[in-house]
Image 1 (cartoon, helix red, strand yellow):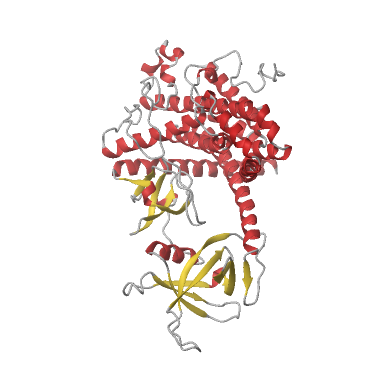
Image 2: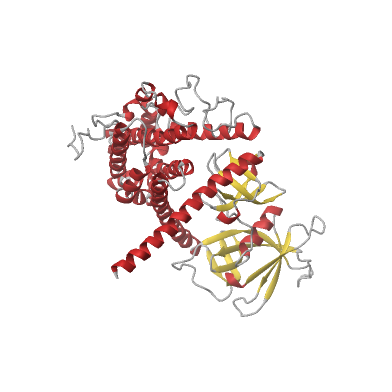
Length: 548
């Protein structure tokens, strides 16, 4: 037995929490990975039904069509009306609620709000269960420990024990709240308290993820027997066929999912209510944590990328330092430079187009020639001194052309390049990103009342270029621009991140009522945060006046 905590007796690394009240974690069958997959499937299917008009009442759980969709598993046959389609119990079917007559006194929206808060708790229990397997089954495995160095183990598992302790503490507080009353008054105040006081451990874990991947890959490569041991551990029934990497990425998945769950509660909370205020506070704190995680990861990767790039670049002209503190890559890629046919000294005709490789950073632009595995810079300029112009296609040879004008290059001269991209999409992407202040249309809170095309993601897409957007299934995006060869420039509604992605990863939302609902829910979040933000500032000003 482990040492007891302050509030109750907890068995160290136990997959359940013993607190003398409802222990949802003991009744959760799904691992968190399964919950996320089924939750995503349910979101996509529900939206499809709404889009076709088959299902309009969002407060009523839909009958799920178990047809195959990409990146989402089929629902098990034994799911019934007592679950939310994700294999998680519904609040309205818990024993205490069923034995009461409370449901008849609640509106559909109030029941939906109870279900959202209940899902936040049960999903945390599922997450806690998966963390327990990661620690007890993998991290504490004697076979695995005998094959890992202390450094590799530290990098692979990082501060996962602190993460589990934070989840355990959070789950206890949620379960205590659910025991207090049949009708849950709020959970976002608990989310705010724990995010503010305990969830900073997520920042260290997520920041360390690049080391995790490297350490795990290196350990497998250096010791082939480790791969066999890991496969044996993964085949254990308690892992339910899930691989080890799916366990070590759980913390970042959870903190981002938690923000979406709080956002869903905010959308349903009564305007001007205490719940609206607590959900806004919780949402903001979670955004701070996620933003800090993302910024640290980006900073580490940017530095590593610059170090790697510096080793591959040479200068045919005046050199500039590559590694600086605030520099990062925006886009890179090959285009063709139209230099014009001309005779060489050997009287051979030089090609009309020659390949060049462009590197655009946030403050610097390099034009290079690729020679073997090196890039030789023959021109460069500050990013703010670039101007582009689209050119109409004039036959196949002169298709996808655009001009790049450098107002002042390294020689302090103006120069113009005629460039040809590989496709229509590549041309558009270069033109958008090369402009110092591109005047491109984007979605803002003030324009959310305007109808525009929307898509939902049905398959995960990992960004391959800095100007692309990583998508997760069930993401809703507004279409800002698109190209005939199958690419979309869009803005994700829940976090306003923008970028390019292939339209094959998405499907159109055709129902204008559903698009309007998505916009209004998004606007509700922005409006509530803006309103309460200004109220907080006014309160702070008045408080300062009283003090002084």
